[in-house]
Amino acid sequence: MLVRLTYASRASHGISSQLIREILDSSRRNNPASGLTGILCCNADTFLQALEGPRAAINALYNRLAEDNRHKDLTILDYEEISVRRHANWSMGWAGAKQANRELFLKYSCSDRLDPFSMSAEQVNGLLLELAASVTTINAPLID
Ligand SMILES: Cc1cc2nc3c(=O)[nH]c(=O)nc-3n(C[C@H](O)[C@H](O)[C@H](O)COP(=O)(O)O)c2cc1C
Image 1: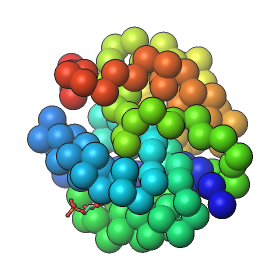
Image 2 (image 1 turned 90 degrees about the vertical axis):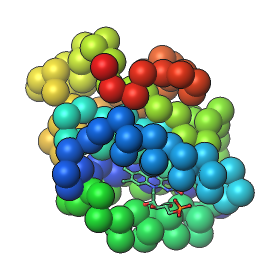
Image 3 (image 1 turned 90 degrees about the horizontal axis):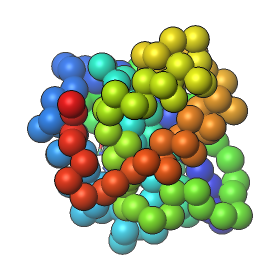
């Protein structure tokens, strides 16, 4: 049973390149063995992440994420059974904090700042699909 869980959270102490590096290192170390893929995006102090994989592994990771005090206010935006992955190519795709993403943030919400807490599941899914098209896993600037 494959599922996709999409959630938002707020960094507890800001988002630095080092924090992103640590998260991506953990993801790339752990996710493949559990059959997990996904995409992570952030802006200012906000994370938006979609996780895809076996239901048990997704739920176990979410429980771990909820215990991680580097972020807070975890809010599930969407949880669905899926037959096909959207983010199958990466253990964790990093959508970056590129200037160009602001246009996408504006396209799918009221402003050009990422605010998934005020977006519908449909908007969030549309945004992540478009961000996925621009993901590069290697050497993408962590924060510019
Ligand atoms: C926003 C955010 C996203 C994360 N995504 C993942 C992930 O996809 N996979 C993962 O194993 N850990 C992820 N982590 C880290 C976990 O909370 C946890 O620290 C880690 O899985 C522990 O495993 P490690 O000791 O191998 O690093 C994330 C943390 C944050 C703050």
